Image (cartoon, rainbow, N blue to C red; front, side, top):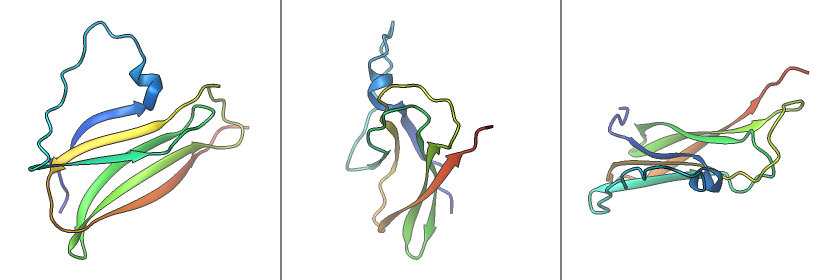
Length: 113
């Protein structure tokens, strides 16, 4: 079973996105922790760009819910920005009682030499 009721709350590179000037503030998502489950996937600090994290999908397996996460990093020869980044992905879905498991798949971006 795929959880199609997953709603993306935020996706971006942490503080770099949060500090971008905006003309209007986006509406704050409503979260009721009695009904909702909020998922956060983060990679921590990196000295360059080229990193990404994504909550890809969710499904039932073994009596619980499994969330697939892909963590991307730049490969050798990739041109990246020279700035601190903190990749993060946040999603909300209907609260579930079964155990929650995360399966993280590392991915390296292949760049031309």
